[in-house]
Amino acid sequence: MSEPSIENLLAGLTDQLAGEKQLTATLRARCEALEADQERMREALEWKPMETAPMDGTRVLVFWDYWSHDAFVAYFKHGRWNGEVALSEGDTDGPTRWMPLPSVAALSTPRQP
Image (cartoon, rainbow, N blue to C red; front, side, top):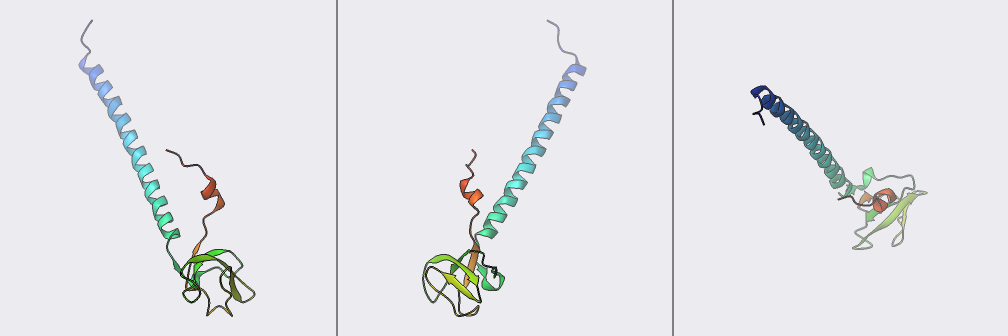
């Protein structure tokens, strides 16, 4: 069996290096995508000021200092906040903080390893 030529060795190393560069680029892109997903999840889990809450009947998770020490689902309709625990008299005496509910798709999507 003959020894591989320098040219063949260099060609093999060049191909290997190109493959490693591609793998590195792919891994870097996946890491960036995961970091962006993590930031979106972090933002979604932060309590937001009520001034930014939807006022169109959309159900959201709220915290209401006056009525409860637990968060619960509520919605704003006909000029007041409605929920299982409390009913406001307007948009000023209602919940103090809110966050969106998780989507059903997010809850039902199986986790991938």
